[in-house]
Length: 273
Image 1: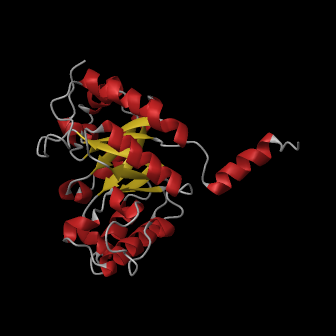
Image 2: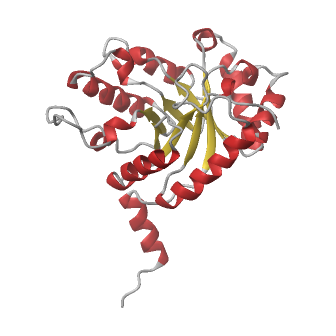
Image 3: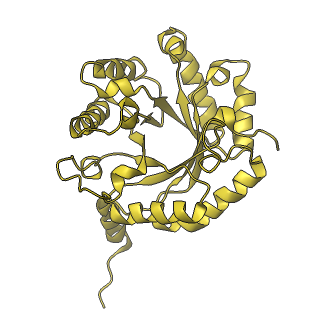
């Protein structure tokens, strides 16, 4: 039997897209006012740490994006988060940016904050929000927008997506549609918005997608929002119950390279000890 040197094996894994990601727990922070406020920031970061959140997806309102003080506040946030072992990603999520006429606004935002040392850029551009069913043309526009964003971004790019684009087509084959996973090379990760309290089904679908597309890195996204149907959201669960379920997911998914879980969103996440 021939044995490859360890460095050769590691390089092979990296090139094949199969290198394991360390598990982390994250949250979408669409309301980032406390994090950008100098007085409130330490307490907010402490609360996030107490709940095990180390992967922070930090969104900006339109007013914050225009505020000339925002770059300095974000620089301070990133520095303090890094000091406590937390990563900060810029979270942007207007589906209008998918369209060619609005795409320039996304690029302008990326360029505005390009000097902030974010750990990544995360785009939550749900293509379904522009109408259903989704025509092939809009899927291609989504992919084109991700390409433009990746080229403009000084940080690694990750995205959120409904899992349907990574699963075999049901019923009529989507023969005329672009293959979404085939066009996502170069992404840091894809957070699968597989909202469900049926954990067995969540595990089954997540692992099937990860094994079908081994060249991509995946994370799991779950909701704690109040506005969804009870079976789709973990709203009403205690923080302890959510942490226990997170550990169960880690045991079920991490060995297959799933990088962690992202909760939607921090405003709805229970804050009790």
